[in-house]
Length: 265
Image (cartoon, rainbow, N blue to C red; front, side, top):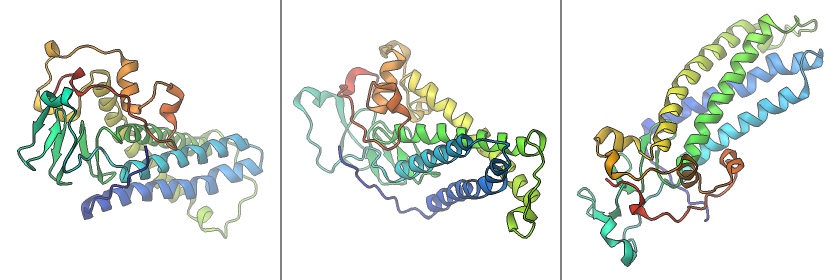
């Protein structure tokens, strides 16, 4: 399954995504310079701490960029409908195109998306069947990076020994307190916001329900066959290998699950 680029022309989305990239860039540039490298040179921390920080930061930005440009599951203009599944398709009353049930028309993007969860301005893209796994990875690594940053900010003042060699001519050390306060503020905001979002996303996967379906109250427990959580997660991530659920550098191979297996919209 090749990588399909999906670019949404939306100035509001560009601004939101620009803010996220700014927060990521700010912490990735300043935290190592102020905390990690100086404390490593004086033996207060190990090289593994620096490597882990950059690794989490890399996974975070890769999942962000891929979730932003990945095709969320846009339906083609003339989809080929298998004869065995024709009864599980319906006509969209906004774009007059046939779509599988559980699809939704995104008014911002102007097309239908398979198993659409919601349109996210922070990635300037819809979250649908083909990029939901990347969005989950983004939430997970953003929480991890924010937590790691907050821990380092705390340790710098309250746990690590004071630095003996500080070059006060450098900008980062002259304005260290202000830079770390900004970092802490952004870390708390990001961690608080993303944690709530990540929780609702996980609950949606456990119950096999999208955010749109929850809001429209159209999913009734009686008509929904219960699936094990391993199966619902495997369908979202496109693999049953749990270690691959955390890797943003791969291509998702959708599991062939009939559209009518679960409840439809």
